[in-house]
Image 1 (cartoon, chains in turn blue, green):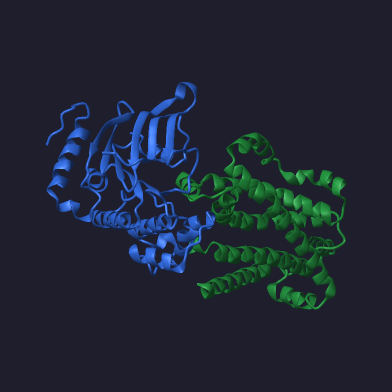
Image 2: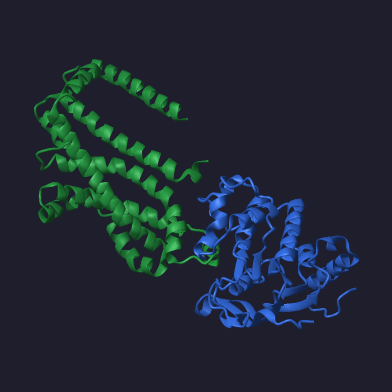
Length: 258
Length: 248
């Protein structure tokens, strides 16, 4: 299946927090890869190390063991080829929307044309928010601003840490579809961390299930039809939801349903 | 909002004046001059050059002390707040020296820096320094981890970190600290000016007191208070301008 070369390769990744006797192992021996124009969902209960995994992939947290490679290069810190979207939006409350959107491009000295800026704002439906501060926006608007900011960096890989978890169901589904429209049009890959089964099935062409007992990966399931906006009504969507739910609820039974 | 603020000030002044008038009737104008005669003396004083000389000297000392405290404590606080290792090194020193009443260092400072402006300015800055330092450091420490991650993921360097995150996060706290410091600074100014100086509102006030000229003494009290209020309001206006995002 993975005939295309890997964009992201994670091998033997482990993380232990704390010194000496207070050590707490969060992740152990995690392996996965992400291809080009591919999507991966990492799903698991709270506290299973999903966010830690994503932060390490983003180069924001150093791993205790293992390696992360992006296009063959070892990741030792934040890379310009990646952008991250956070659960609490990661917007700066003291900057207006217009400044927030351009901040990454400004740091990286990337030229953003007026057309590119208008296009992304139109795609994400945030055209008239420039002069507002983040706390004057709804949760959905904030996350769209964060997505626009990430998109302006033209990343090969977008990392999303529970990006829609704080949103109501309708807004969440709306934003998931926005993400897929961007994904189709802009040809990046993305890794999304979520505790929401439907979200993982809708967005991830492969789904990594974290096992909180072993601190590693419990299972990886293929979900090749995901990543299109029409998938939510496809029969496969429902069966994959059932499979995933079963695997999460019975992590050590190797025979999935369906 | 702005109008109601001025109205509040006007009403407060009216109420205070009425209370003052009542008290002066009770105590006798010998001990507590009534507001009208103080006002008369004030209108007289503002026409004299010497009054403005005293005021200018006091205002200059305060402004210089606040500026020095700001320029030393804020950068230091920003660095300590964002650098755990440095903070651990300096924390014991700060905790030990913060509770020392710096005013008791007056003789040493005057011996070191002389009886002129410098000694007074340094003593006032020293007292404000610690308050400003701790507020700034703690404001930066309260920074949300995710904000730092977000900034790093956007490719920010160390300068961007200070310029776009640490500074704006610390600014409201810095202004609060500056406003609180204003009262302390005026109090210390009065103290140092009452000891060794040839100019300043502290001297103006103490001199009038010595001559039992209570009406002029009250003019000094009003002038010193006015400087405090002007500084306080200036910091308030600056905060509303520079931290607009906080007040929406």
